Length: 612
Ligand code: X8Z
Ligand code: ZN
Image (cartoon, rainbow, N blue to C red; front, top):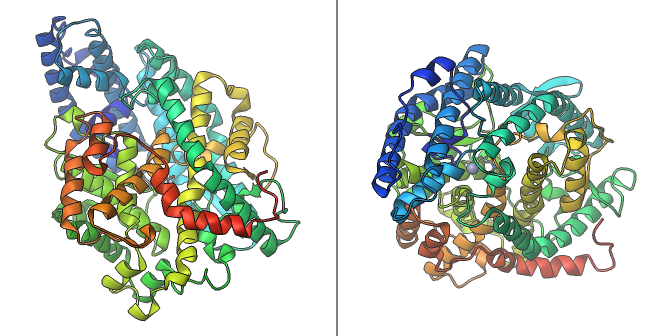
């Protein structure tokens, strides 16, 4: 099963634990496989068979839980998760038995490695530990799904408050929403999160890792320490661009709200950036748009509303893009089984995700779609997961995953970079007379940067925080301070009110209670520009990079499909090479895309203080 780019195994491997009865009665996998190459082959085969058997029911249970949260579905999901975790731990320990065995084929060795480092939250083998871990995880995810903030003193659900943070321009209201969401959703999870982290660390140590963070960093075809260095290097490449954007946006916020709300120097107030987590700032483009060049003459959300698009039509439009590249249409079941809008009568997890329930063709998305620009992009993002899942569905189960998790997150975003004004004309959303001319290039780039560049330090600090929690560098008693310090250091933002250690702001961001690793999104933000540049080169595009749309280009589609079909069967540099010709992840393409904007921002920022 796959959720958000979790492979069938990741589902299995990220699920949490076993009921005692099942634990005792489950057939021991290859009870004592011979410590030989043939024994390793047999072990891997057996694991894939058991994994496939587990995965369909587990996925269905997880789906029902996420789309209908009740105490009963929580209990079922927690039990199924526990079974999965115990199974995955058993597989990982079994795989480790082949560590010293010589003569194992590279293919089987790769699968053994995937089994050893593929868990997200391992439990120790202590009886009951997997169930406890799974209970904690399910409880935290579901509480997040059921979370409410306040707006005008009235309760408001997660997807509505998320949208309202993008449209409200009243600092008092923004503060009310921000504080209530963080206090109501984050703070109550603090104790459970600490318990969860401690159990997962015990589990990771049994599997031979220093801690759970080290395990998370080990899935990138390189030593875990090298991966941490790689993320730092990538950040250094793009940091100057972020600084320029931060300086510019802070000045605009100061001009709009005045010194009392946003000072000219120091960090930016986190609730003013148009997003609950200050992770993407496109929602306040109107606040920062420079007169003249910044007036794009359209906003994708307004276009969708003007043409009376509904969420289904938005998804159909996303599908249309992939079809234009030569991908087969989505199956009928996608439309029957997906959750595209928020059900009115029950609690669900609204945070968008893409699923592959049977590791074949039962692909779906789960969203609470609103007709706005953010969700139009998110639809392309989620469909990217689904098309990837379907492309690698002929791979052995252990390879049914992205080349690395950053690839999985990058596909749909890379496609969405092609949503240019000319593309919007082609699909009838934008009037040809309204296409912004070359004099609006800076505006178009700034609009993109508000989402793409603003995200980079957030994408990195999320797991810097968890790596610190798992290693102990951030003690349980300092969760909040550790979070605020990293938010300040990387993003240059500060909370609208002082926070103390009774709070737990990390818990107010979906991926923390859901234990979804986040470095993948940082990588994806970089990779999507590498993919995009490669696609535009393949298409023979000669204009400014940001005006390129590879819509309708079957050659690009075919080459993309080659990379997607590989799944996780080869180290990720091989997959990257298959599509882009290079083996290195690099911020160069992103920097090139935004180069004209960087020059312009630095011009605007002259004489203004930079940094915080
Ligand atoms: O979680 C997601 C996707 C699902 S995989 C909607 N994203 C990250 C987030 O929302 O925080 C996409 C961008 C970053
Ligand atoms: Zn995703």
